[in-house]
Image (cartoon, rainbow, N blue to C red; front, side, top):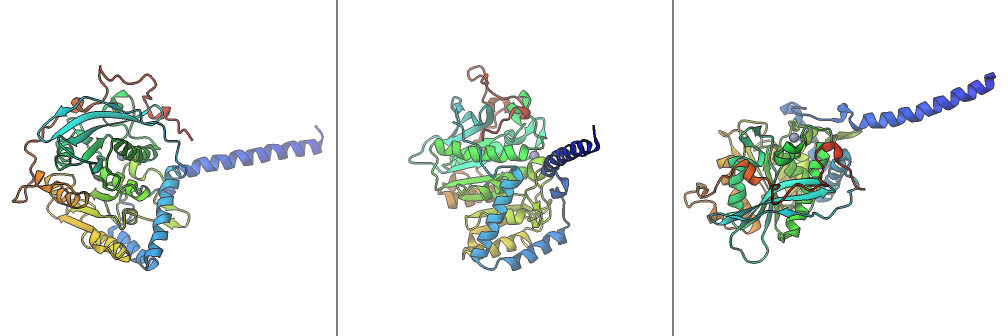
Length: 399
Ligand SMILES: [Zn+2]
């Protein structure tokens, strides 16, 4: 090989390696840990001063709307959902009704992507007329055997109580929980945030297809279910009422890969936190439920004032509320539910008397707590479809 040829050959190899390197760099960027804001990413005072600085940047409804649009776009970009995949038919598999006092339960599985099943249970009133308001209710990271996700008594009580009050309620599993977890799906996956958000979007499709009233749709969950609530509310205008429980914090970003494992909070020249994300609900009614035992302990003095400020830009400061329970700890336990029932009753047109006694205590004694496996959609009569995918790695985003 003469010297010229050698040089040319070296040049080609060099250019090829540049291309390969830039592709590699893109790949690395996607999981670039420096763009992730995980757990207690800030101190309390850093979170507070971030909000104070931000407040100077939007002083009109128009300015906030432009910021909110930027926040939405970063959630979609960070999760890789800038362009939605094609919505496949839901092909819902719906089980038999189990009828209880004032409500009934049916197990459900539907496809969010071809072969990818979202599993849950649908709770509806036993008697109703006209279109029902709809509530979708994700859960947090409770995974202790016998006390898991949507199967916890706390969760079953709220699903049933909402249904007794007159709503169509869909309680659904996070990715990797419940029956799909037994089949091989994992929660701890680098792209679980993307699939989980997509599944929530498809849950809305499901309850609307089941006949829920599009003007009265709410989402509520606690902890990681609170994160799912405000992310979905930010990106999907079909949510009309939002109730994130024990999660909206100026300094805590959520510690799981499904909350902060993809770069939704930070980018080059961009930074947000979960308070601004939750504020994307404005001016739709929102209730924050907080307690003294976790990262929502400052809600009345830090997070709520910022949200009120944004809602006030719409002239609707009263649409955002906070019930703070200083002696409570993390969860969606009875005092939180007692706060949520009247709020959802007010904005969805539900009968609060079905869930709250005259003395303000909750009316839940008649609710039957079912065994975890009784809430699984796949059984002998409704077998898992042969085309169903049994692990995260089988997901194909059908663009
Ligand atoms: Zn998670």
